[in-house]
Image (cartoon, rainbow, N blue to C red; front, side):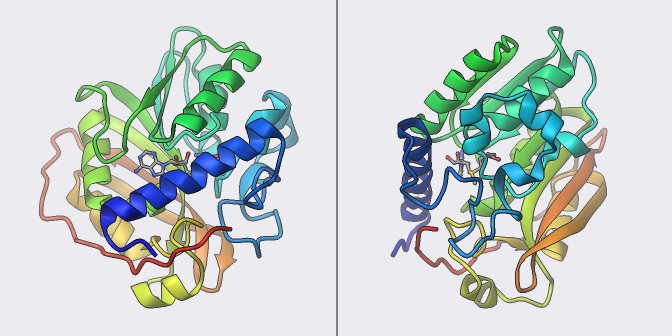
Length: 274
Ligand SMILES: C[S@@+](CC[C@H](N)C(=O)[O-])C[C@H]1O[C@@H](n2cnc3c(N)ncnc32)[C@H](O)[C@@H]1O
């Protein structure tokens, strides 16, 4: 079982490398690749993955991109993207939301995907080629240290990734840094009801399965406000485990962000694959 933050991150990386390989090789080694992750194996396939995209959106994508969909929502449906905008997808996986974003922002816009897992980046690049989108760039790196300049992005999206971070305050601060003043976020994530302790969240599923590391609604809202966001909203959309929900997280970067002390959240880790 992973004990340190570095070990936990490495376990996450291994888990998603395995998912990418399962799609690339046409196997289903981790119960994934069938649209039923990132949660543990008990998911019925309607709470995570490709089922959360409508038929029209799935029709715009190569099959491998939909098979590799491991999210818990559909951030492109809530981010209201416009022609010419620059979008950044944190933890872009097989590239599904980057490809959809690239089509929404058009040739004058840019869609960046950031991921730490080589196998996912290779799969995403392959999917983007198949989808014939050219205004995409996939970056290798971690969401706690985004490799883009300050004030360079209009919209940050993410799909079921922030719960996997071992340093969520750093992620929220980095999102605020790279967004232009007035820039916005449209994030899907797993979020816990406020009464659940870290231990109770860990009882409901593994860290790598996107459950144990989830923030509560209050923690998310407070973290975003501390990082310099306003118009913060966290709305539950569907329950993924008892008291744990797929949620849409929205906020706007204030014109003059003021970083206050961020809450330190150390979720109890529980190892395991889906
Ligand atoms: C649950 S999958 C979601 C992938 C994609 N967003 C989707 O909806 O299909 C999580 C992805 O985030 C990546 N990831 C997890 N933690 C990360 C971190 N700290 N920095 C960068 N990427 C990370 C993993 O490599 C994996 O590709």
